[in-house]
Image (tube, rainbow, N blue to C red):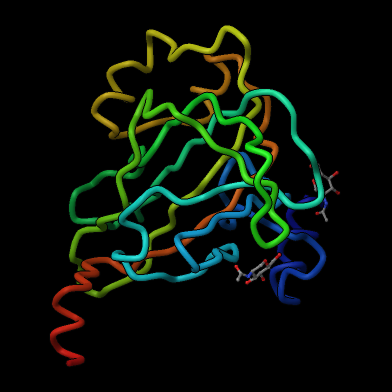
Length: 200
Ligand SMILES: *[C@@H]1O[C@H](CO)[C@@H](O)[C@H](O)[C@H]1NC(C)=O
Ligand SMILES: *[C@@H]1O[C@H](CO)[C@@H](O)[C@H](O)[C@H]1NC(C)=O
């Protein structure tokens, strides 16, 4: 009771008290922001971007902390239940073996990986819907356990990318809570090519 009262007053007063790096209501909630750059576009939590901006995997890292060890990045699309397709989550990336690269970009200690799996990156492509609305795409950075592997119960979902239950995945894979997170939004049916034509 007390917790929900605190949360709603924080929302009413602009969320200043609780710095959230995950969308309202998303579990696990994270308040340390993962630095995410798509080329020269820096993602502030909740930023609405064109689909075309997100075509290639972003550069990620953290500010104000020197990480050591290995990290796992998940990117999860959370479609509104009203979505025509009936889907609620789409796994857009699950990339392992991120380590500090030693590079610094705009104050960010950049993390890189050579891995392209367990699930390679593919950019947001929300379906066309009426009325249009933005969909959330959430980035979660976890410490990677030394024996990390996709648990058997999640292999099919990781392969099909549909319907991932991240809280359950975390539990089954022995992941602790995400250290850093961020999210962006892309409007349903965003077809940047067509929009460029209209604007030209
Ligand atoms: C961030 O999260 C931690 C752990 O949940 C909490 O202790 C801390 O108060 C939070 N900080 C802010 C600014 O919300
Ligand atoms: C650099 O990072 C800050 C946040 O730390 C951000 O506000 C700014 O847009 C970034 N600038 C560039 C050029 O990426």
